[in-house]
Amino acid sequence: MKFSKRFDTIEPYLFVAISRTISEKKKKGIDVISFGIGDPDIPTPKFVLDSMKKHSDNPANHRYPESEGLPEFRNEVSEYMSSRFGVDVDPEKQVISLIGAKEGIGHASLCLIDEGDVSIVPDPGYPVYSAGCNFAGGEIYKMPLLQSKGWKPDLNNIPSDIREKAKMLWLNYPNNPTGGVADLDFFQEVVNFGIENDIAIMHDACYSDVTFDGYKAPSILEAKNSMEIAMEFHSFSKIFNMTGWRLGFAVGNEQLVQSLLTVKSNLDSGAPQAIQMMGIDALKNIEVFTQENNAIYQARRDKLSSALEEIGLTVEFPRAALYLWCRVPEGYNSASFTELLLEQCNVVVTPGTGYGEYGEGYVRLSLTTPDELVDEGVKRISKWKG
View 1: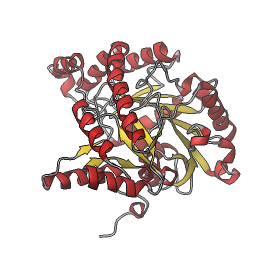
View 2: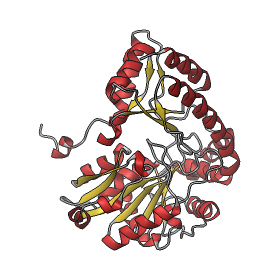
View 3: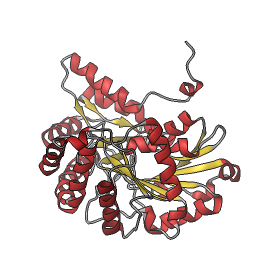
View 4: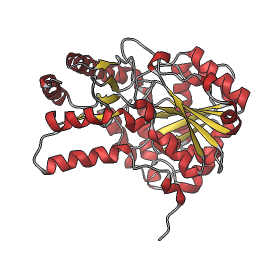
């Protein structure tokens, strides 16, 4: 068999390898503590589960859903964008449901990218930005995120020939994996850049409500003229501990949203309606629930940061998202330090190079590990001496 040449550019998904490593250790009877994958350990809240059970009993929700999502769901998303960010979106034309934000992010390149076109992606960054472009037959330009720049790209360093060929530019704030945040002035700069160069701006805002120390993350759609050029992706996975239910939404520029709907309507049948109804009830209670949820993650952040600093790591102290981005001790690189923690401490972390070449010298630890395992992981890590 001859497979598509696209597979020459697609690397195995990072977290598949991590899961296999953990599984192999467990088969040997080794107790492994994983800080590798950002999958919330806290259960989906009861009021959301009760909603799903209630709406699952309705025969109307047993049929094929529409790809754009229920009108009730899109109306609730519109209300959320207005109350949370002060952004007005038309629920009929500027909002669609997603089967998790990852699905929408992966499909977005099919709306814009032809062979030879360029997608500008952050490095380090979520691997799906690049994978979507590769599946669409495009080319990747890596936009470095550096600590010296506050983990934000320098748009002035993007070459003119790349600007001419680029069709889309990806952003993600609060950022995975670095924990970096962006203000509205930066978003305005990016929107102006997109309009000036006719480059669609795609903003992954999946961590916008996972914030600490009183910080509130803005939406790129708050920037002036953003509706001309930008589309934003949101997820229920990390905010409501709903990774297994697969629900998200995209909002923004009407042409971009409707183009994504065209792709989706040809490739999927939409998020199940009972799960969309879960999402409606979740959004109605978002403020109270996220305060409680984020307090748990903030306590883990503080505990784990202290332990890592004690063994010589330089820890980025995040105001948002679910990760610690840590510079490894002198004498190690991302891979060697990851391997050391696994072999000597039976602790799994993610090498920074899994997010791109500019992730070298860093590891990422997720805060989605149960408290008792965080405590045990801290003990194991604290005993290590380089």
